[in-house]
Length: 355
Image (cartoon, rainbow, N blue to C red; front, top):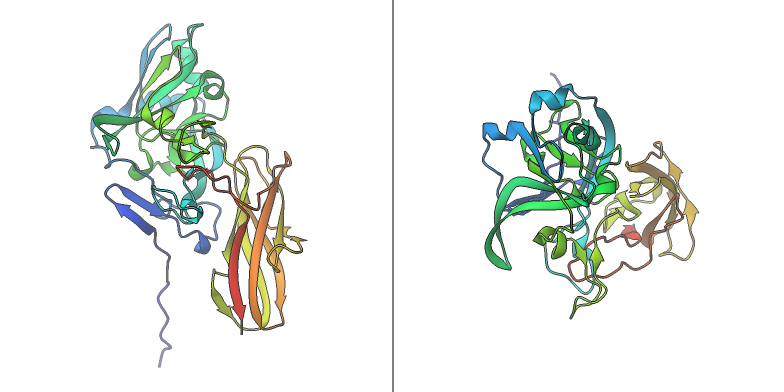
């Protein structure tokens, strides 16, 4: 008699909302450095845009010498750049803030990574030119709808400073993991801004507009802004670069374990520079050991790390991880609390019990 084989068990996205669709990557169960489209986290402010043939054209207008409408085939023909990039929602881990903040209650999985291919934005501007008065580049998406604070209809639109737009790694992407970008992640054109939180990487780009002042759209000046004070807007500043961070993938929080030898595993990443080290504490932060980096530390990507733990004694353990980047930025003990819950990067922690 043949021995029956167990079916392969695969993780699923973790649903936060369905209208619009917002779902987390099951980050604890990710072992690859490229997240497939089905497990890539989904962050939307509105319903998905209706798919029409106009998606296949990309207009650039505003303060340019020669306004142009680029076809998909034209963009495919330009010199391309391929980058492995981690995209992290700026609201990742929002549910961990104390006091609690309103907004999508993300856990640790509003983060994914893969290979993006596209044309550097600066190459497109070689065809249009830029006027001397140009200050910012606005990227308008096809997705639109109402905001909770207004009855007006808005497209999701954000800007980048001219200097950031012209960096060689800022690209208009059209492929993800060697395939056309999945529709739910921005097909056919998505901006990729490596090192910045993912709200900057506008999906389904409808048009690009060059302006001579600061862009005042609500997803630039109301949302995606750090508000350090609960009662007023004093000290506010924009959300931009990803904070240095780490995440413990195994063991799971509140997991029961036998006595034995375990490999504690996780990922760590940084927005500027590269990851330089990850440290781990098995005693709630009293002492720290250095972890082994099990994948290369590269710009714009997460790095895998591990630590061999001999769990010989029964009891409860608080395990913490702490990352440091090449600029000396270190995960803080406490997060920078802000009213909208962005940029959480406090030392990661889990509890386990050895029985």
